[in-house]
Image 1 (cartoon, rainbow, N blue to C red):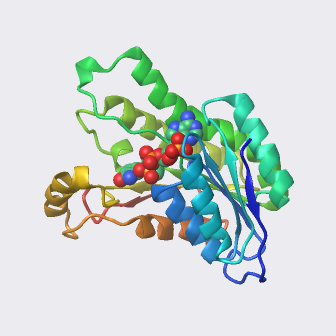
Image 2 (image 1 turned 120 degrees about the vertical axis):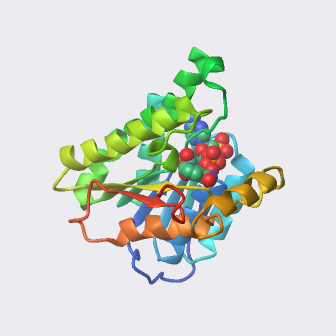
Length: 255
Ligand SMILES: NC(=O)c1ccc[n+]([C@@H]2O[C@H](COP(=O)([O-])OP(=O)(O)OC[C@H]3O[C@@H](n4cnc5c(N)ncnc54)[C@H](OP(=O)(O)O)[C@@H]3O)[C@@H](O)[C@H]2O)c1
């Protein structure tokens, strides 16, 4: 496992000071924004990456810049063995897990009649089985600390997108998994989901699509990574009594 661990020079303060947050798939994009938001709230942070080792190293350095401990762990969330080893390593490095954020996922646009069995299974493996495997592997640690699980769902799990049958179905399943786990893992663990709508991550190839989506959105713009991270931080710091909820963060697009 390619780990980068850094130790803080100062003692962190913030709503998550003294807590440990594990964010999957957080080398870049929304996962990185979530990991940095947790670090700014004073949490020690473990991130996982699959292929983006270099980005993960940069992110870990930036997390450590917030004065908290940071570690990057390689993990394939579809693989039970890899997940178990990653959770063990995260606990060894940071001492436990208070908040698990299941962020790693895949997204793909395919006409319904062209979705192959391989594509269908791959999307479900990362988007639905992944959060199940990581949550199950982290249960003991989360129970010990009265922890929280936050899943990254999607507006696509609530609204049907014609060219994303496998993605939408995988996220709808994740929303249900959120509610099932909230019931099954209570009272020790609170489980919620954040369902982003259109988030603008400044990708040049998506610029025209983003402009079009902004026009259709009641708030007249797309969301930012920081806004999704803020919703995740809400659940991470919310009363334990808030559980089983799917919070849509979409500027009203799904209304
Ligand atoms: N961006 C949006 O507008 C939007 C909208 C709705 C919902 N969401 C949800 O919000 C979350 C974050 O969105 P995003 O766009 O930032 O995600 P993303 O870039 O599509 O994926 C995040 C990370 O997931 C990791 N990943 C994929 N398959 C993996 C596997 N088998 N094992 C381990 N890691 C794996 C990748 O890590 P490596 O790069 O290291 O390989 C990737 O960097 C996702 O759950 C997504 O579905 C996003």
